[in-house]
Length: 299
Ligand code: NAD
Image (tube, rainbow, N blue to C red):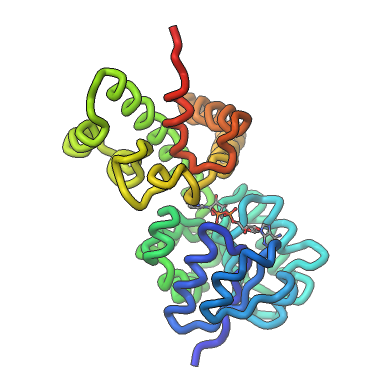
């Protein structure tokens, strides 16, 4: 029988990901800062413990799925963090999207305790998380990749080795910058089309058979009523929070600065999602940029 897998962070993504580990036959030992976040998983048979340290005490493979760099630092190195009770030889896989330099720091801290750390951020959204169709971008020691893939393959359709630790995060930051820009482009296009009198479902159909097609138009359309099973069909609840997208663009911005790279549209997208956070969209899905633009009537 399979040995237990630890899972830390049971939010929009972590919950369905951990469910897929259960479905693949792995006992899951999990925790979240908020005990109520573990309820759904507990009902499916997972054991919920009080802290990351308690999980590390019981499992020698642990996946973390947390919002941002400070949360990962806390869950690893905090007073009740993983590293407090970690066992030698433990495999740590962080699937959060965080600063590549923090990933490198966590790898060094883990190695000091005799553990192996890999960064494995994901793309795909909550729908793909539920269907085990995520794409994982993995950085770390190559000899450990197959061990990571065994678990990640239960939660995703694509598991790609990127290189040394931090390179998974680099790939993810690039992807999300493009996603951020594409979503704003899709939202403003749809808004203009509607104001020009086009039916949004028809315009979507046309875009998706034309050169404007992208993931935001064909799989995650931001206009309510165009598509089912996406956040725009659910008052922009669930999905990928605007604060998280603003966080990812902040990472793009700082890595672009440190590498002397121009990202004019990435920078603009960052400012747009930051503005949204201050106008009540912080906890809504990032596709609510459509609603944000729709409220504007400018001269
Ligand atoms: P979320 O905010 O829904 O969930 C994060 C969970 O982590 C929360 O339940 C929170 O209570 C918990 N948490 C925070 N700090 C903790 C700690 N110290 N110890 C234990 N638990 C802690 O976020 P999410 O949407 O699941 O996203 C998680 C990560 O995945 C983020 O880095 C995000 O950028 C990335 N991501 C999200 C999506 C998406 O569509 N939602 C897609 C790809 C990648």
